[in-house]
Length: 223
Ligand code: G3P
Image 1: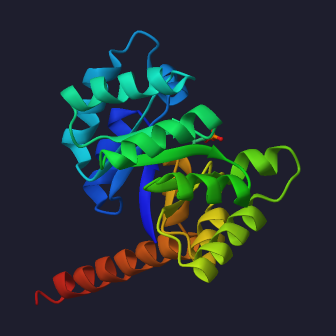
Image 2 (image 1 turned 30 degrees about the horizontal axis):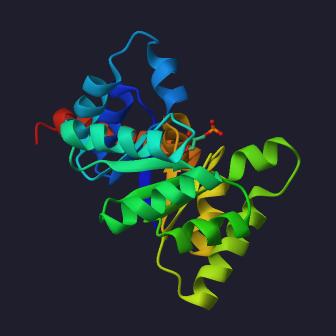
C-alpha cells in the first residue's frame, strides 16, 4: 500500500518527502486555509509538487459540473500533472465522466459508502477516497466501510484505485493495508506516530551506551 501525505504544510511535506516514504500528497481547501488563509493556493501547490513529485490531488470548489470543468481546465494550464479532486455529488460524477473522456486523472473525494465508491468508479474516477475518520467521528465504522469497498473491488476487479482518507491513527493504516486499499493518505502527525515504537528508541539508546562503554574501555588500555 502506498502512502500519501494529507497536508498543505510545506515543512511537513518536505520532511516526510526526505524520508522517502510517500509517493504523493493530497490537499483540500480546508488544509490550504489551515496553513495560511492568505496563501496563494496556486504557488503553494506548485511548491508542494516541487518538493515531492508523484501524485498531487487539487480540489475544485465549484458545485456544478460546468464550474468544476472550468476549474479543472484552469488548474491544468498551470499544473498539467494535477489529479483533479472532485466531490462525490451527482454534478461531480458528470464532471468525472467528462474528465475521464479527456484522460484527465480524477480523485473523487468525500466518499462514505460502497455505493458512492461504485458510482465514482463507474463514472471513470482514477481514485476513490473513502473517509474513514469522519465515519468514526459520528460513531459509524470507518474501517468496516473501507473493508467493504475493498471486498467489492476484489470481487468485481474494479479499476479505480482505492485511497483510505481521513485517517486518524496508525491502526487505520494497518487495517486499510490488510483490507487491500491501494493508498492511505495520512496526516503528518499520524504518519510520524506510525514510525515510532518505545522499544526502537530504547534499543537505539542502549546500543549507543554499549558502544560508548566499549570506546571508553579501549581508551583506558590505550588500544
Ligand atoms: O484526505 C481527506 C482529509 O483531508 C479529510 O480528513 O481529518 O478532515 O476528516 P479529515
